[in-house]
Image (tube, rainbow, N blue to C red; front, top):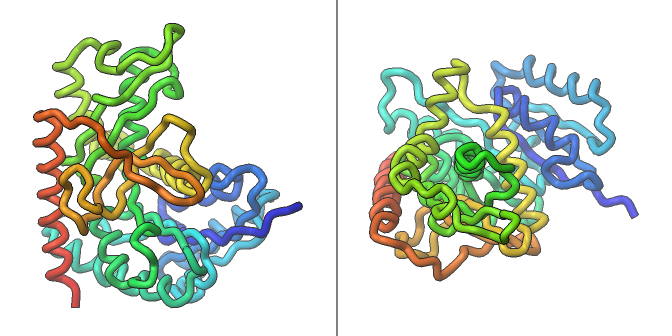
Length: 332
């Protein structure tokens, strides 16, 4: 029997990430090849014409799974009835701007979008925040959409997770699909901690620890971490634009695993509401290793944390606590 279409909102849909993301969703990359979708695309009034162009292209691509497109600059129309919301739109930091300026702009954007989701989204709507500062934007959204459960609001650190997998696969000259269980801890910023202490590689002799196969702790504790932390900046330098294709792909991975579940024995990184696990202050949106089943995520518990890692976990938590304080000082 044919499935009912799922309504998926993409904000900032006329932008670079949105333009890469909407065809992936329409092709079934996010929810599977048998799941029809209706796309809701929101952008700001100055981008209305470009947004209409994206809609025309979606029609022209004749995606069999795409059962409808709503392209609008009206936040209420965009949020009505949506089951999944991917929040790509945000105010980017521009040259000469202080963090507080960016935060103030994003607080006002996320306040209006959160209020519209709160009132008009479908019950049990899942929200993924992509726009930076992603963790703190997700926290702002949570404040203004109190009826959306904490468990349904997340932010994107899957891009960093995928970057870490990519670095290990290149270093060992193996398929990226053979590497699993890297972890991104903390903030989607340069303080995040890409951790390979529990990661493994599938080999002909069974699963082997990444650390054992790489056999270079100096690289794993140094260049590997900084490469993943600074990858976004490196892409901007090379492309003169920020990561779009990889961010869109990671957003699809994040939602797919959340909705359809993670493979047995595999965990992924998601920015979720901290319950105090691993001594991370409760009430932050923090990236943890999670497993997903039946549309729910669960933090992987009981992993040993060495002293080097502990410092990294605390450092990124400290930054998130500062961001939270800054954001709350902008709330009115």
